[in-house]
Amino acid sequence: MKNLKTIFSLITIFCLGFMFTGCGGGGGGADYTLSPEELEVATAVESFAAAVKAENLNTAMSYVFSNLKYRNAIVPANYTVFQQKLEDLFSKAEVNDFTITNIGVNMGGEDYASIIGYLTLQYTVDGESATLSETIDISLERDSGKWGFTEFAGRNELMITSFPPAL
Image (cartoon, rainbow, N blue to C red):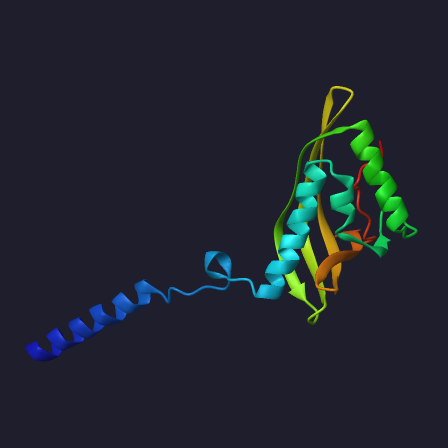
């Protein structure tokens, strides 16, 4: 009887040890590694953000394809409207910071992808600071090895984005 109690106690301690240890794995987080294609897409988005932060129109627009669908109003706009609004931002404001964070990449094949990210723009107009923050949805395609935006939209019911802001 004493041996049974000892064995039962040891088995209980052993099982409790496993229960509190956990599996050590996870669904993403720091252990998640991007595939090479996902990394290329994320790099293109981050490079666009760096170009906007540096107010470099040519570099920023090199990540935007001419067939862009730009959702800044109820009626979809295009590449030209997006470029004009970006030029307007650079000429009338000073970009203090621009980031697209929490980038979630969804591959739709070898040459198609979309991301959801959190856009934050801090800028100054006539000495007054302003901040624009929103969740965005960007569709991308790869053409001749380079990823470019084919749709820039807000992550909301109407898919409207406030970037670049009207100044």
